Image 1: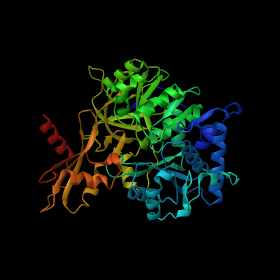
Image 2: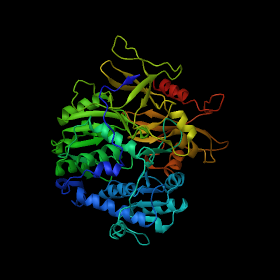
Image 3: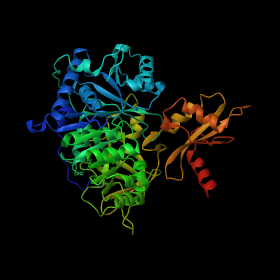
Length: 531
């Protein structure tokens, strides 16, 4: 068992709203919280807090409060912060949805989360309405932030003057957010994160980052993803930094925003880091204001990190986490230049880790001649560990041990100096451009095609080092199904990042005696063909 190198920090027993905005000082009210680069519009901290209180008041007036779940389907825009924290201020729970979701995926999450309202934006309205109505949410409970005929707008909610409710609840037991995660395997499940989980992870993380109120943070990673939600949105708001919101990633726009708004802190996923380290267009922009780039959501190789740092003359850090950890558990501290950039850094304060042999259950605590432990599955215990999976006590029991350790599904080593590195993984999850792709979800979709008798999906690495979903397909008898047919079938029914990018037809899917797909056999097959 390895406690954190860092001393414990005190976790305030507060709601996330009171934690972030309760201590807002008079001199901070005029500070800029959010900038919309499309319009140049700025939202101050004072205005943001007022909007949050106004939204909470109108939600309460309409009967929304503790026990209710509200869906939020939106890209990164300043209004996201108002709705997200307005719902939490009203005492309700937010389930954030991926802005790339199809109507069927929206319906599935809203139905599972038992959401009774949905806030969205007009560009996503078609799929939002189709998904929400299929999940039993009527049109008068679908709010379109920028307005649309037949629906209330955000302005309608902010101008009624209804007072924010007086609430009293236990932050450690009250679910604040329900992001959806595939965990270590299987289909997406609602991750129950309490107010205390969110507060704890901001408090733990901010002691490792040198982010401060003078920083301008480029917010390109989606707020609907737990990384963007905690690390960009909540930590930046806590330290009173300014967030420059980007609805989607475009390299030119990304560079222009950094240059125009003098961004100093940038959070990215590895594909963006690759572009920053290699793409020739980067040299056409002055992004010298950036002092730190932190990569997360998927493993970043050390060579790319070093190349980007040297090219941009900036500090490059890496962190590790998962939705079930609110999400951060490890990070390279901003004041430690001696830690390898390929590592995930050190565990945050208040966190204890174990490295466990997945076959025998043996815990590794000894260090070899190279100063590293044997590789073991990383288990994490701390105040940021989720309450559990919504309605899935079975999956919760598989993921969280009796003494509160979360099994991450990642295989790691620890150095004598206290830093960790991910070396492999036990979980089946595919990470494509930082997004989670669950093989089981794609397999279930493929099996709805009458021309497919059986299917299995694994992640394979392509030339640029990116991991992509590959489908192994058994054709139904008499079928002449082609690779492109399979790809098109998925494209029409799933978010773009989930699409199958390679297809191989085989005679039989390898399975265990219990019927479980032997993905390791398929991975071995890939290695032998590549070799």
